[in-house]
Amino acid sequence: MSGRIFVVDDDPAMVEAVAAVLSLDGFEVDGASDGAAALRAVLKNPPALLVLDVSMPGLTGWELCEIVRRQPNTRDLPVLFLTGRGDVRDRITAMQVGGTDHLTKPFRAEELRARVRALMASGPGRGES
Amino acid sequence: MRASPEVDLDGRPPLSAAAGAGLFGPALLSLSLLVLLASGAVAPADVPAVATLAASALALGGLLATSLGTRLLGPFAAPLRLLVPLALALVALGKTGGPSSDLFPLLVVYVAAEAALSREGGRFLLVGTYAGLAFLVLLFPAPTAAAARSNALRFLWPAAAAFGVELVLRWTAPGRNSGTEDAPAHVQLAVESAPASPAAVGDTRSEILHDLKSPLTVLRVYGDLVAEAARRGELPSEAHLAGLAREMTLMESLAGMPPRAPASAPSVSSPVAPATPPSPRSDLVRVLSTLVESYRLAHGERVRLEFVAEGAEIPVAADPVALQRAFRNVLDNAVKYTPAGGQVRVRASVVAQHAFVVISDTGAGMTPEEQKHAFTFAWRSPSASASGVPGRGIGLGVTKDLLEKNGGKISLLSEPGHGLEVTIMFPVSREAGA
Image 1: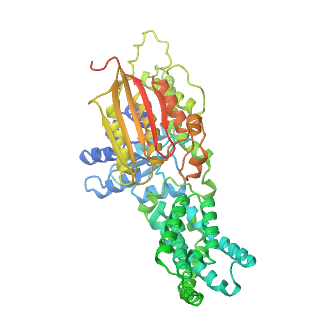
Image 2 (image 1 turned 90 degrees about the vertical axis):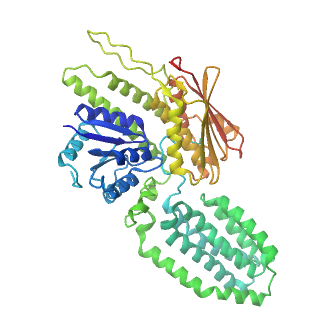
Image 3 (image 1 turned 180 degrees about the vertical axis):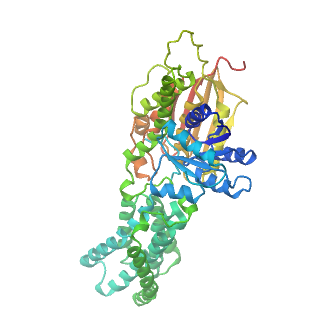
């Protein structure tokens, strides 16, 4: 598969790890470790998929997602949340702010790959995987 | 120890604290009233007026802070829950005779107990109490006892109504103290880091486990990639092995294991001698400017953050990921423990082939005893724990390990009440300017 994916996590090691998995699948992966820089990059050049950590200094992943959803050129961008908190309340909030899917840490490489493939295959939209 | 390894939306007391504490005040006041009555400090004829005033103060304050404030004001709700009834009680005290009245001991008991038992806002409460009393002494003449009772009765009906509303809200919505299910999304955003239930509040173990999830994920992902390569009959990527080794080092630090020699990727036997991986190299200016900008966005309205670098680039032979994690922990602490209106300064400089990063704040600082234990794993000072600032006491210990494994050193300088200065030193990369 191909396409550009943008990964945002305040832990740069997580960005590197996610990029390592997805680049092996043929995706072009860019990343950022803070929400504001990520927002600028995403709005300037929208990727095919946005992978977001939830807890970050500055803009949280949820806030970033809400902003992205309000922009015409990124309104339908698929968003995959990665978070260490996987309770029902967090999953609901992820959906409320416009998230497309939700992956709880710690996850396996294959699980990440499968979710991303499904989201990329379904294309722009808000469908659940 | 003032420490936290992960960035949260910090400085936020548990949502349940304000509402939960609301039951304490009326009980305490009732008890105090009985004691004062039994000791003769309050005449039986004055009990209705005193009780009315106390109930009105608590009911109005509780209504504002627990029923409305928690939703609207987030971290400010708990201090308000204490300050609002206090302010009302002070006004009532002035109307009924000022500090010379029999109500004064009641107020002192209330303030002392609340301050002792309520972590959030305890200091605010004491400062507010004495400032308010000074104000009342200056402005309010002592009225007659009859006027005092008359004033007190004016509080009765609005107080009773407010108290009733609070009770109704509390008993008809039992889940609201710990849940935000029906809150709008933007409000839920602000409570993302809050524990999900009162039982989880202050649960250090669960917080540490949460902080472990990120490095554990990275470890697992690189492990999967190495295993997949092996299944394909290929050699694992050097980058993946290096990532695996780095995360192992971090996990060892989190587990409190002593630092070992600088981490390197495990060797892989191969017919072709692998090239020696290049030494990691980071630019301190780049790493710090990005981090400070993030923290400015997150906390800039509360704390002034400043970054000054002597030079456009300060290269050091250190892993940029480890540096980001280490600096993030220190910055996180500085921001958390600096009160509103304070300042956090980050300075990067080079002196005699050594790069120095000094992160100073205008917070409460540390005592010599606290500094001695600051790098001990999972240790928090009693004052840090009592401050109500969330923390697990593992950030600075991990930071020290991360820095030492990358050739750095960290030291603390502080005088209680005058902030904390954290100095981090690295040898400048020999490739500087290359």
